[in-house]
Length: 260
Image (cartoon, rainbow, N blue to C red):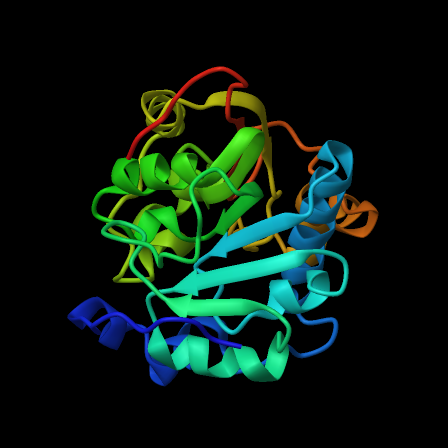
């Protein structure tokens, strides 16, 4: 289901069918493939967060085709926005009960996303694509109810992948990544937006090989096993800087007014 349709921009055109197929290798989810596991893991974490805070309404920024929303829409009131008209057109297939719209979180969000009405907002692999992520986080903060949670993930520029692989690191392969910031800067952005960081974690190391001179199978126990365990139990349990992506959970204070 879709709602609203702002003017399209050049950024929208960058995230077309070709982008999704080149970046993710598919236009759907192959069962037990890497992206299938990723969606399952993030959805489980979101579900746990929502249940812990007694949440009912959640919004996904950069919802893409609606893969994660499709896993959650039977339990919660789910909304999504994405800058790509192409992606939003696919939501009816993968998340038919969710209300999704084309929108640019850096500039403006649809009117039906009411200030202070969301228990949780999730943004996975989104903020690194934005020229002004602080503006986006500030806008998102206004949507959260007091005590609500923003959960987001971004590439960890201090990971061993970033340090050991240099220009070959996975996050440098996407030309739309324009905000590959240091972890401490992301924490500053959260604070500047008026939110309090409640937890930091990581997704693990999944971009083998890390040691070119060592057979991949020998690297599995060190890198893949902890990552796979976290994925199987559906929890963000790894230390904050021990992964390709940094996960941040930020809470809106109970008594603080926030404006975009």
